[in-house]
Image 1 (cartoon, rainbow, N blue to C red):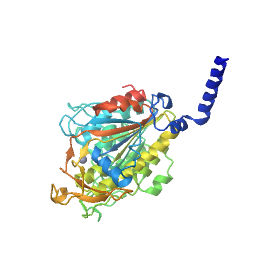
Image 2 (cartoon, rainbow, N blue to C red):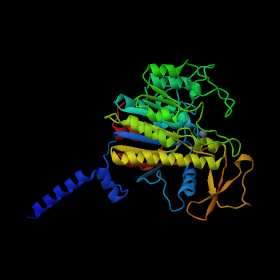
Image 3 (cartoon, rainbow, N blue to C red):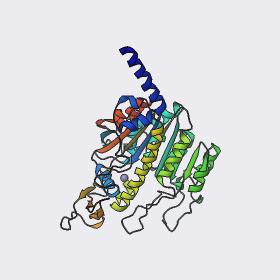
Image 4 (cartoon, rainbow, N blue to C red):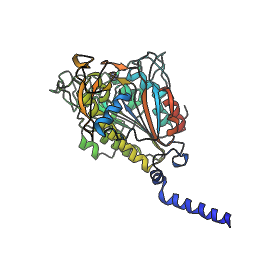
Amino acid sequence: MVKKKAMAGAVLSLAAIAGLGLSQITDAHGPNKAKFHHPEKAKNVILFVGDGMGAAHREAIRLATVGQKGKLAMDDMPYAGIVHTSSTSAVTDSAAAATAMATGVKTYNGAIGVDPNKKSVKTILEMAHDAGKSTGLVTTSQITDATPAAFGAHVTDRKKQSDIAKQYIEKSKVDVLLGGGEDYWYPAGEPGKFEDHSAKDESEQSKGTEGNLVKKAQKLGYQYVTNKEELEKTNSKKLLGLFANEEMFEQRPEGEGDVYDPVVPLPEMTKKAIDTLSANKKGFFLMVEEEGIDEMSHENNAEKMIKAGRQLDQSVEVAKKYAKKHPDTLVLVVADHECGGLTIEEVDGKDESGDGISKEDGPFKVANSTNQFTIDWTTTGHGGVTVPLTATGAGAKQFEGIYENTHIFNALKKTMGLKK
Ligand SMILES: [Zn+2]
């Protein structure tokens, strides 16, 4: 009798599971860590890189956006890690940091997908492609800038942006490429969709070294789009979207023509990339970078840094929505390094530690409160401190602990079941 009852209970709960779906069960329990809710293996991976986003950046974005009791989408995840970011130098740049995450190898600053001996190392994106998955790179920076580049290209110097573009379309065959940097896809004298020497930035002009790469991409089956409407409309499985000559924002100190207002906001690029890549039954690998956090921090511009950070968080929300319906999806949020030596301080006019552009910014309002805070900077360069990582979904447990940035590659490879 007892046995029978237990059986009936088992059958009932199985039926309940089948009816509810895994994601709803996770909801009912809140963000707990029970193994049952998510498979250990991830079919899909969405990796967010907040370029330059240290722990204090994340906290400033949180305070200004949701307040002291609030939780950002990127913080509302069940697993967290702390990541050492150094390259073969003590303080990394974006190229070496992204190479470490993409290949598991620590290298020199400026290196894109190559080891300290300048030898190419296979990337996680290339491995995912070889396993039949679709792949995508999305950024508010040039699509050929260091962070995306290290996932889909191999060059000895990050400045070779036209070589990087060529490798994306011919060698690593990245399915979805969305970002800025049209200037590297056209040779000098061919402005493309975005005019040379525009009022926004006189210095911008086509400077490609590999011919007309947009034409080449179209020949290889890419649909080329240059604005929001074209991006929304296209159903192409291979997508090249370039939305600015260089970055999709103007990084400057406060009040000197600083603009963070990408023509296609990062959450929309993220949504389109997921919609496009998820058509592949074998799954996908997508890296999404928000670059304004870093570049506004180089300018010690806290207001625009926070604005960029909010866009990153809304993009994470888009990915979490997808992952909720597809529990075999892993969503990660990390930074490549800190930028600006940013810290959060009390509002105190007597405690001013710098002048020029590195003077304190603010005060900023804490959301949902009368409290305020200021932001102070120690450098216009990168900081060497550890950065937080948060993870949710399939295989997220792999990212608990304190580890080197190279662990991200190893854990991704394991959780996606990829072979070299
Ligand atoms: Zn930087």
